[in-house]
Amino acid sequence: MAAFHRLRKCHSAGVTVSTHISQLHTSSHAFAKQHYKMLVLGGGSGGITMSARMKRLMGAENVAVVEPSEVHYYQPIWTLVGAGAKKVSSSGRPTASVMPSGVKWVKSKVQEINPDSNTVSTEDGTEISYEYLIVALGVELHFEKIKGLPEGFEHPKIGSNYSVETVEKTWKALQDFKEGNAVFTFPNTPVKCAGAPQKIMYLSDAYLRKTGKRGKANIMYNTSLPVLFGIKKYADSLWDIVKRRDLQVNLRQNLIEVRADKQEAVFENLDKPGETKVVEYEMLHVTPPMGPSRVIKGSPLADDLGWLDLDKDTLQHKRYPNVFGIGDCTNLPTAKTGAAVAAQSAVLQRTISKILKNEKPDKKYDGYTSCPLVTSYSTVILAEFDYNGQPLETFPINQAKERRLMYHMKADVMPHLYWHGLLNGLWGGPGPYRKLLHLGMK
Image (tube, rainbow, N blue to C red; front, side):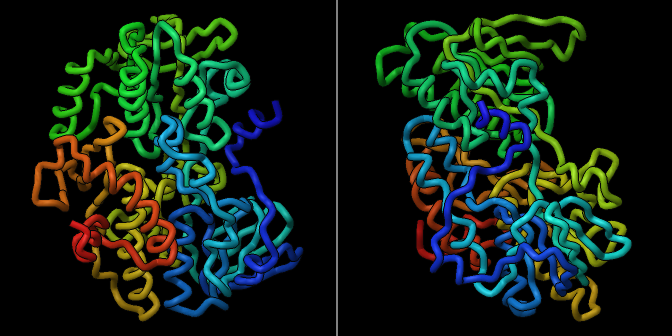
């Protein structure tokens, strides 16, 4: 039961970190004032990437990272974990092993940001002042906004690839499937990796075909969106797959309740307020509602909706020129993905290097983001696009077509580049996949 209460706050489970790894950086639990030239909030993809870049730019002793979690996860691989193609153990490494050496690691949660006084307070009582601030606090998952969750995860037949606590439950539900409805949901909020809710549908379809159960399965995708995917070129290909594989897509359907003891899911029709529908399920994959960090939402750094308010070109805060942001916590009008972080990191480094010299930022982020849409255990449609929703593709082929090469990149190449490239601040920039071409990985 305790495991599912932790989902309400969506913090990663901890592990013991070996002594020799811990010695690679310095950590702090000091109940005292500290000061750093560059303070980074968050130790996820964006935070670790930028701390590595800032270390090279201004020296490790001038950089600190506030992050409570002892484990750092490569979350994109959870799509494959939920389908049994990867082990959950492959997705996590000790935070100490990815924290840049010499950078101060403040092992606590951010409690308050006060940009007017250039200070941050943490839950352990530490007050940190800064000259420059990078906010990389990600999004918060809100399973609790669906009635019956997260406690419903105690029951079988239900899982979610969006949490390390529940991703293996997806795989168990898929393996145990016998007959009936397999239901996959997309919430009525912004989400990170907006393709993931349907990726697990395609993988489940492939698994049920492989195990001879597909004839007894009714696979349905209930999405709050009015479209299957936001970029028409790729949406057209996905609709072809949906029709060819006899998948049922129901638009503008939002999950509002799970009755796990009865294996029932309740959906509201967003186009007809007040109208609800109860769907029985044999398997249910839940994509939780998501929202901005409460720390940002309660600070002067937020826009009207609670997201970090950035200039979309330079990634500099609109009102506080010594504050910057990266990744899922921002209001940048592009899809929230790891590939977006990779593209943003190079632009942000350039922006900060210019600001340090009292020069005007001269590099613009074009909104590049990418979503490897896994459509089976061996194929991927690689969607790449910009702020305007225009394809911004890497390869001289039609990327809207399912390809084995793209699956290999998703499953095998990208995790390696993440751990050994992106987190070291050595891989990124516009169109991260183009780096593969430069490396000869064609």
